[in-house]
Amino acid sequence: MPVKAVVGMQWGDEGKGKIVDVLSAEADLVVRAAGGSNAGHTIIRGGKKTVLHLVPSGILHEYSRCLLGAGMVIEPARLREELDVLEQFGTPRVRTRVGVDPQAMLILPWHKAIEHVREARPDALGTTLRGIGPAYESRASRLGIPLALLAHPELLKTALEALHLDYLPIFELGKEPVISPSDLFAELMQVADWLVPMFTDVSLETARAMSEGRIVLLEGAQGVMLDSLHGTYPFVTSSSTIFGGLLSGIGLGNGMVSDVVGVCKAYTTRVGNGPFPTELEDETGKHLAAFGGEYGATTGRLRRCGWLDAVALKKAVRLVGCSQLALTKVDVLCDLPEIKVAVAYEDADGTVLADFPCDPYRAAQLKPVYRTFAPWRTPSDDAVLPEELQEYISFLEGFTATRVSLVSWGPDRSQTLVREAGGACRSLNS
Image 1 (cartoon, rainbow, N blue to C red):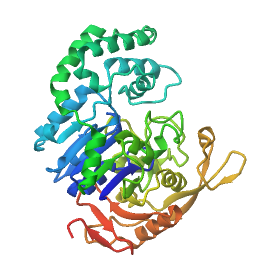
Image 2 (cartoon, helix red, strand yellow):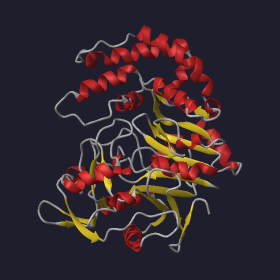
Image 3 (cartoon, rainbow, N blue to C red):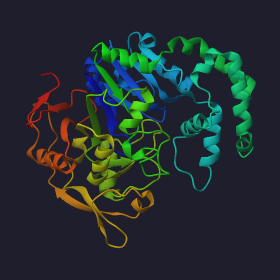
Image 4 (tube, one colour):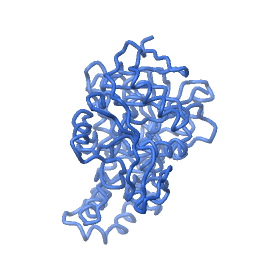
């Protein structure tokens, strides 16, 4: 079955949007599994820039159909805004090419209000304030509002009243008034007019496309190290970002995907709080942020920057089971006198660790053990990688036991080389 999945291998912001754009050029169906508008994919093609938060990046290809899976949490206003922007961008037939699973959860103004209350506390996690976590919590509590209720007004009224009652104690801690259940119901009925016609059974439609031999691409959100179970808890996202979570969010069985592409940057970044062993708070860190344009596509916040953490990457490869890696932003390291990669850690008591610990609190105390590499010049589209970059890639392949099949620099789709099994490269146009 010609089915590929794309998964982020770090703490998000790896450049998945560009890689999905590259791989979805021939895709019939592009499906997103989880997350919400906390994700941000910046796409630049032909000098035009688009930032997508909900709709899969494949929408920019004229004949791709794009689906939002049951594992997602969706804020209707942001989805509508994104569809409008895509139409203004000149994207054809946007509203007929996007399908939404009615089992996905609605993000309501109440979810954002709750998150603002929590993030005002001294122990704030540093979330995107998009209501993602509270929306997932409402699903787990069975008080959530699935999109399906937009097609059942009387049931929606009852569900809103129950959720509002549950949230009242938290609302009373906030400084701002919240919308009433009756007013929110009226707003959602207006949403129903344009959103209900987009409903589709994403699991069924995806499975049918596979059985028909059509090309399917599955799109993950955030990164493996932010996984709610296996990431650096509590500084994680609210959904499962590993490959198993992607299958669950869409509704697919194991063995239905032929290829899993893990995306990682040539260095490492992180947004918000949490352990980050290779973080650089010196001039090198500032250089990576400036030359890498490391500002969140969703929040605009400056990302924390550091050397590539190959130990964390090795764990991510294990959790995902990826068959190949896509290495992005290799050009950002070109002007540095030397390049480092974390190959082990030293614990607080001097113990050397070869693997990323499963104890997330221990991870905050680790000091990286580095291997140094020579810098390289910026690649070009002549399908020849600099020798120094080839050495860097060969090391990563050996360390993670995973082939690097795509090498990317710069924001444009054309600034990407396909790397064959033997190490030879070709441009996307060849």
